[in-house]
Amino acid sequence: MGSETGDYLRSSLEGGFVPWAAEREAARRYYLDARSVEAAALELGLLPARYARNAGSLGIEGQKALHNARVLVVGCGGLGGHLIEGLARLGVGYIVAVDPDCFDESNLNRQILCTTENLGKPKADEAARRAA
Image 1: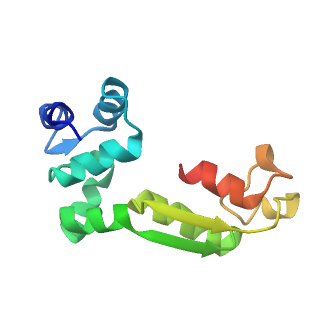
Image 2: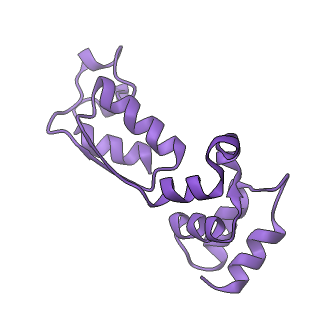
């Protein structure tokens, strides 16, 4: 990661955290994907603002560990959908979701990943889209 990226991220801090807009701009400016920008920030000891509430319990090292973690979730329905959502929001870097099923109407009232727009679509594909 270039020093220009790090300099930009440091100069963009708000309240001690890197705002999402600054991460997006760094990705655009330096031709990086969002994951690479987040990794660069964490390596520099900078915490993305979306993880501000994790700072007290996890710290930078804990957030880095989550960013580099790999998790397999088998089943993307009721429980699996909630797990995937929570893991993604915590900052787990690699989530592999496996489920051979597709969403149907009976899933609408009880599965967080199911919407009327994704009825008939594979659960694993929708989990990947949601977590991205």
